[in-house]
Length: 320
Image (cartoon, rainbow, N blue to C red; front, side, top):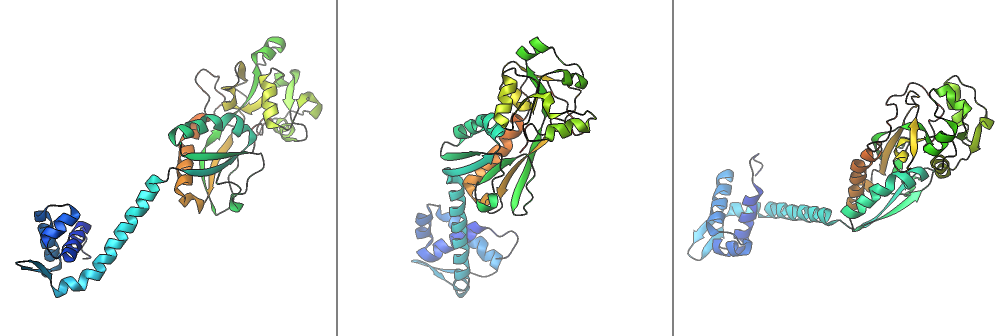
């Protein structure tokens, strides 16, 4: 039975005939044609090189060879049935709860449209969205899946890079109508800039460009990422934001395409053990397919620079 061309259907027919004691009884049990079962038994006998049944007027009688392989054949049957049950459970696992962690900005602007599509595709799956700039600990099961802007370092996590998040200088048309549109990066210092309160990342970014900028040159400052984006959308000044946000802010334009800002990576992470959960796996695969298109600016929006040359002032506007 170890032949490379061995067919499980032959063993199934063999066991049915063995248990029923006749080809006719086995055919009724399997809802199959009697000639088919007879052919299966003959093929198995040919493969094994020995008769398995003796035909009698009342049915069939198993030979010593049939009795010798019966236990092994039943183990194969049990294994096949277990495999079938496992596959059915996997296909039917369409309900459950999955906890997703991501940054506040991604929770507000990136994931809503993705999760709406997930709900339409998988109505039996409930989602808990954790919006926090703190990295949820997947090892402690604070979340099942994380969408992160840094690559997870733990070896027990499975991570997939979904793409890069373009970062752009941006402002609302109402602000540009009042203050003018910057044509060169140096023009930024003559504008109302939106910066961070305690985070020095933008200051370091400008310094990397060879431009010394003091904290006070940012007329509006906040460390709240959502409030930061809303200030840009409200026309308060020029800020540095994830490009995908602009599609959600009518009137906001990307500026200075020559200002090549290093993008942020977008990673999808899950604990190696949880990945075997069929519901978590469904959500992980859905996010892996749906998020990359959402990272790209919608048609009609100004395209940011595609490549990065140096660290700049805006590299952390959508961080974490």
